[in-house]
Image 1 (cartoon, rainbow, N blue to C red):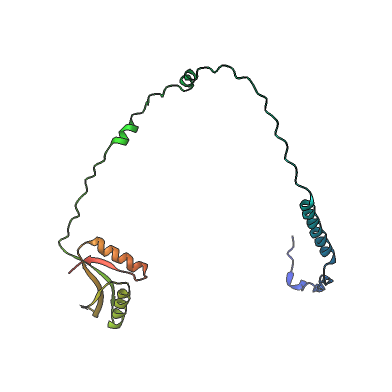
Image 2: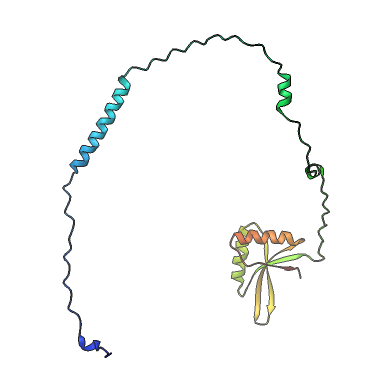
Length: 191
C-alpha cells in the first residue's frame, strides 16, 4: 500500500460559521400561567368556603347494649396456675459468677526516676528568636528559660521548660503546647 503525502494535500476548506440562533424573547408576563394560578387559588377558596358553611355532622346515637345473663363464674385460681409453666433452671452458671465476682487489680507503683526531666522547645542562633519562643510559651501559661550553650559553630540559645519530677507532666505540657501550635518539643533528662 502506498503512503499518502499529507503535506501536499493542503488544508481543508474552512467551514462556514454557524449563525447563533437565540431563543425568541419572551412576551413579558406569562398569561397562561397566571390564569392557571388564579384558577387554583379560586378552587382552594371555594373548597374552604364549602367546608366552613356545611353543618357539622350529627353524632351517631349510641346503640343500646342488650343485657345478658352472666353464667356462673369458674374458679380462676386453677387457670392462673396452668397459664405459666414453672421457671426453668438456668443451665449457665457463669452469669451468677460474673455478678458476684470481684476483680482485684494490683497496680504497680510508678517508679521515681533518679533525675528530673526537661523539655526543650527550640534551639536558636539569635537570642531574639529564643525570646520570641519563650513569649509564645508564656502565653500558654507555662514558664520557660533561655539557656546559652556553646557549640562547635558558635552559641546556641535553647528554650527549655522544667524541671519535671515525672515524665507524664512533661508530656501533658508538650501536648498543650502542640495544640497551641508550638512544636517541636523534646523531653530529656535534666543535665
